Image (cartoon, rainbow, N blue to C red; front, side, top):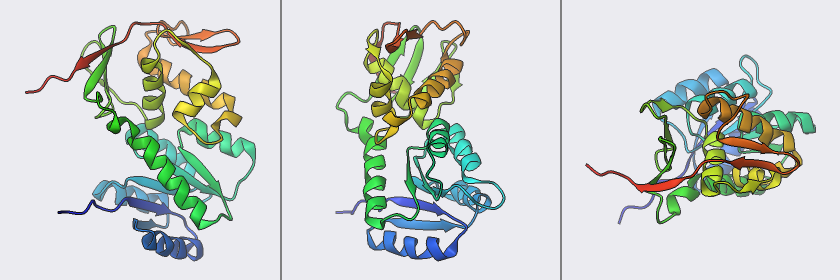
Length: 244
C-alpha cells in the first residue's frame, strides 16, 4: 500500500536564523519543506511545483509578503499563513483582507504553528470530504465546481477567484436567501480570530461582487442587509457533474 505523500510547505523568510531551524522542526513533524529566502525565489519554486501551503514572512527586502500574498490569492488556490513580527491589529486586518488564511506573530511556539497549519489545511480540504461535492452549484446560469474551485459565468468563461473568494461564495451558495451576519461569514471563510475584524468580510464581499455582479454598486446577487449582514438573493441548485 502506498503511503500518502507528505504535506508540502513553502517557507518564505529572509532570516536564515529563523527559517532554517523552523524548517528542520517542520520536517521532523512530517512535512515536506521547501525554503525560499525571498518572494522572487518563492515565485520560481511555485512554478516548478506548487506547495500545499505557504508560510510567509511579511517584512522582506524586495517584494514584501503582502504583495506576494496578493499575487498568490489572485492566481493560485494555495492557503497562506503569515509569519509576522507585526502584532498590530491594522497589520492583521490587511493580511486577512488580502486573503491570507491565518497569521502567527513572532516569536511563536513551533507547536502552535503546526496546529495552525493543520487547522488551515483541514479548512482548505473540507469541501472534498462532502459526499455530494461532485455536484456543481448553479445560480442563474453561473456555475461553481467545488472540487476544481472553478467559477464559470453564463457565457461559459472561467472567472478566476481566490481561495477566500471561493469560500465566501460557497458560504452564500450553501445558505441561499438566508441573512448571514459578519461573524457567521468570517467563521465560515477565515476561522480563528477573524471575528475581530468585521471590515475584512466587507472587503471580501466587495471583491466577490466585482467578479459576479453586472454592477457591483447595484448588486443583484449579494445584498446588504442593514444591521444584519448579507443575503444571497438568488435560487441555488445542485447539479450532478456531467461525466464524459
